[in-house]
Image 1 (tube, rainbow over the protein chains, first blue to last red):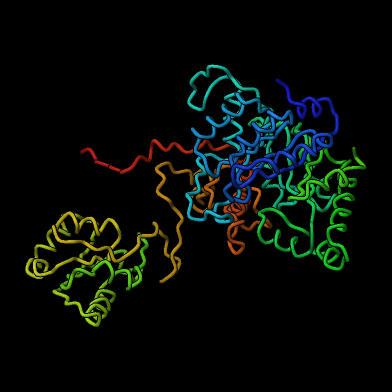
Image 2: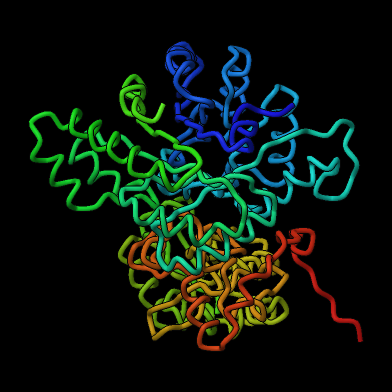
Length: 289
Length: 215
């Protein structure tokens, strides 16, 4: 089965995805309501995998609930909490439940989250995980054993266009492409020029680019994110604008909406991270929809 | 060297609660170098125990506490003092503690926490550079181990948390992949970064490790 995300990206159509965080607990009503409210606005919804190393309901369960509701998920899966057996097993389970889009991630370090005593697994890295996904798709596990029924996945990988030294990260992106990544979902970008350079540097890989846009809710929140979210860096100028705004949230929406327009020419899609204010996503994307 | 650190004295005392007479064991190798269980620390421990109302029947600093035959022989050499004690307090790494527990039926109390195999930057400053993984990749990684120095042990380049060459878990630390990259630039071997390293083969590192050299 080909996902909508894959079909549209491969046809050269612009896509929009969003992120909805699965609940900490079993009550998925709010999660499903949020996802449902985005149904008409986005192509797929990312379910995060114990985001920021904070324990939540399994992204596999959350992704399956979306499939059941007729909403297409992007199943995020990290190497932080599972060894290679658990990763493969989980992927097969996801495929059997109708999941096609998979975002293969290394995962934020355990020390950022709410279970700092847990063992960080990292049996594989994201390149190995993409290799494993390709292997499963071709009908065999990592030990070369044949599968009784092979999955079809549309695999993606993370990219950090603003990370320095960039030539070093480019080597890894090339490995990810070689291992089967078909799209890069980027970390939140605040400088459109960086996305343009990123597109130019990765063009030869033939991997689609979905650029990350983050809704900044206040200056304080932006400062907190700079300190606590790995790989995310909000420029001081933007923080100042938010801090001087009479309504920081409205200003944050305006910044996100402007970024959406400015990033649009340099990517194949946008991924909106609204951190709980998913109700504002239609407003953020209205000019590119 | 095996880097170790003394447990807080209150914890040691709690572990010795039911024992009044104590025999002390130190190690002349690693625990001496990292000042956790050499002559000096044994002497200080003796003083502390005495002030806490314990009787120290004697002590010994074994030349290499991990050497099982030597540990056994040294303890036999202090037979009476050991026999007189209710417990043996060992200020040596986990390997040393187990040489002692294997050589004596007395209650054995571990006075140290064993931390890592460490390089000595300078006296009193130790860094983990090798994690004894059983499958060395240093030839491929410009002589710097990503398996150990990267908190995630990543083998194929930096994670998305690297910023300006710094690590996401410690902004004061340089990302190991940035270190490897610079080193490869110096060597004119940056192209090495194109090669993917496979996932570790953990079947080569089964616990407990054993090696018997065939003659």
